[in-house]
Amino acid sequence: MQHTHHKAWVDRARGVRVHYVEAGNGPKVVLLIHGAPQTWWAWRHTIEPLVAAGYRVIVPDYRGAGDSSKPRDGFDKWTMAGDLHHVVHEAAGVQGPVSVVGHDLGATVALAYALRYRDDVVSLTASLTTSPTTPRRSRRTTSTATPAPSRRLGRCGVCLRSTALSTTTPASIVRRLNATESSRSRCWPPAAAPKRSRATTRR
Picture 1 (tube, rainbow, N blue to C red):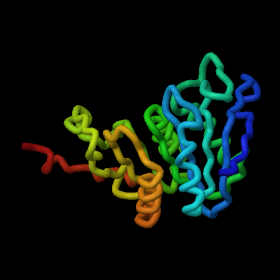
Picture 2 (cartoon, rainbow, N blue to C red; picture 1 turned 60 degrees about the horizontal axis):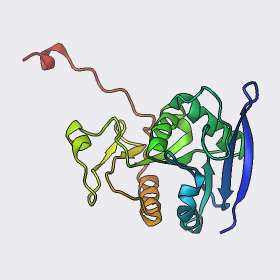
Picture 3 (cartoon, rainbow, N blue to C red; picture 1 turned 90 degrees about the horizontal axis):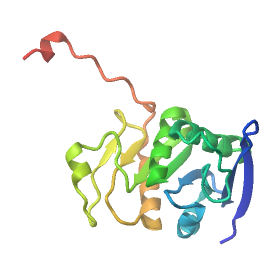
Picture 4 (spheres, rainbow, N blue to C red; picture 1 turned 135 degrees about the vertical axis):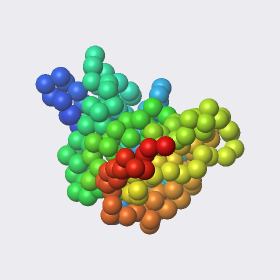
């Protein structure tokens, strides 16, 4: 599978550059964010199936990992999400919204990405992590066979899946992306929850 390596400046003042790999030229774009301690290489078996499914695939080493810069600070997820957004839309030149897939620690970066840049996200898929919409009881359950149910952040739009599977196969990621893209609604960003009246909140 042919792919190209790049390095993009995300903070020249602090000397921070992010290394990323790019493959495919499809009309749909997916950003893959690795876990820890990993690099883009963790997604090597996932890139080809996504390209075959019509995706342009962007796979970075987030700051502190792989061939990216390793500064002393800037490791809060909001800043790390900003790095990757710069890579996608400035360095790689993507114009429209992208699908975001995060694994392990990368899932928390992916969530920050979706929350910070809501209009630039088609769908959000997370593996081997828990999301804010996952019930506490599900967080205590560690199954190696059955994923937790899919849940949505808000009424609809970006879907978050919290799974306890030990691995995420390339085929499952392709199916997940196709499913979320086909069912996406225009009410993302999610609307604020309606306020409950005092009459309904009193017991």
